[in-house]
Length: 280
Image (cartoon, rainbow, N blue to C red; front, side, top):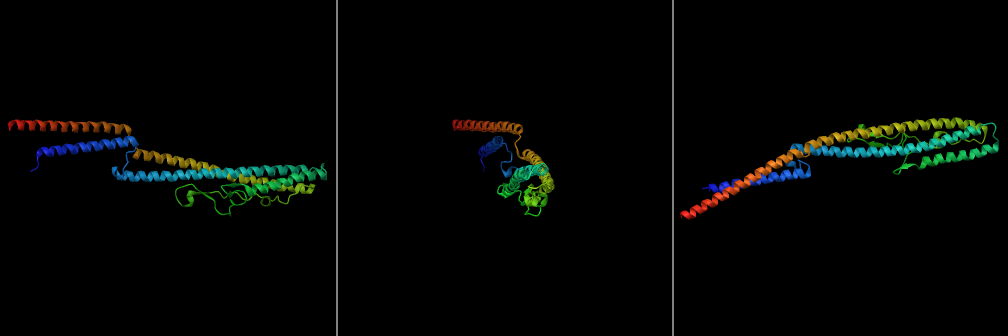
């Protein structure tokens, strides 16, 4: 036969343990700021929260990729700007040398600077790099090996942005390698060649600028997605402090009530024992 008093004590102790466990859970949620500290708390919500966090991490890496691509493009644009300045200076020299008032000696002097400009164009073309990758030697041309920015979380082409928009800027590719302004006729031909080269470089800078703008827009879009997913995940898994503090207060009240009930039961048991002793 089960002792009813022992059964009452057992029920009270179980109640106290449950209340204490509830207090610990509330304190843990308040301290961590998360209400899904364990998968068992809400399995479905925990799975969804984990998926959202995974998506946020993937999108965050995509933003880093795009930002790296933006720096890549800016470096290429800076190189193109430098070569464009050189070509413009070469065109100025060609126009100056074509003037009929100059003598051959003066044209030779202009041609020396002109030759240095051609050499500098080729040097910059062959040396400009970003993280070990050449930018202006044709490595980013349309027929070169693809250079893509992974701007999304999937493997398909919709998640990639191609940077293959910069053809070679060498003097050979620009059609100015054989230009010479030591004579009037050569200077006149150089004017035409350098004008075409300048137009080519301006078009290349326009393409690079368009890619740069696209990358900036993509980064902004990804950041908005991250913000929205973070807000959703936060609403799903973060602790509502006001609600949790209210739960904690209620839990404390229940815990105190169960302790008082146990104390009262102990006092009753002690009184009963004394009464029995006195009777005996």
